[in-house]
Image (cartoon, rainbow, N blue to C red; front, side, top):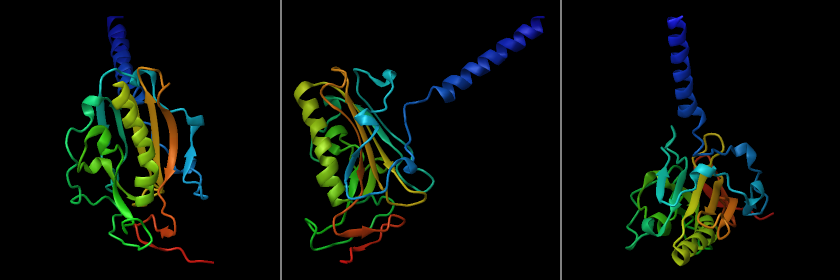
Length: 228
């Protein structure tokens, strides 16, 4: 009888270990490309009725940041942080030109502002967590996506934190089709912590596009869109 009880005890311990090690890990939500519609001219779409997919246990009054490991193709996987003023930069950003994310090409087009198609795009912007040349936080994205689209939401979050001194739970997940080296876009989620999302809340997908340019997402090659 004692052997049976001991055996059952071991089974329970193993079961609890498996549960907490594998089933309770919901800190990162990976988004399948199949759940994102094809680009149809709308640069930003709302996901899940604009409700972010954070767990209740994610909400903390202390700052943290985490960057997922690169996958087998060298692509970024995710970046998540609970952003407070203590994570924000206190000096100018350093050069990041030594990092070449997957699909990176230096390509100029005269009709793009500053002429350059691609940026080294921070998943979590430097102004929020002061990350410089962190390979796990940089992807290849267009000037339009980085400066025009993502920057609008990054500024909202940054201005809110600087004004209120509250935290914002924030996650950016690049989404790739199959083995493509350039992301089709990024999912951005945010929720202000101390006021239960009253100040900041969004769950959006921003497409990685550039007006007038056709991108080969498999390798980052590009060309001017042919006029019909």
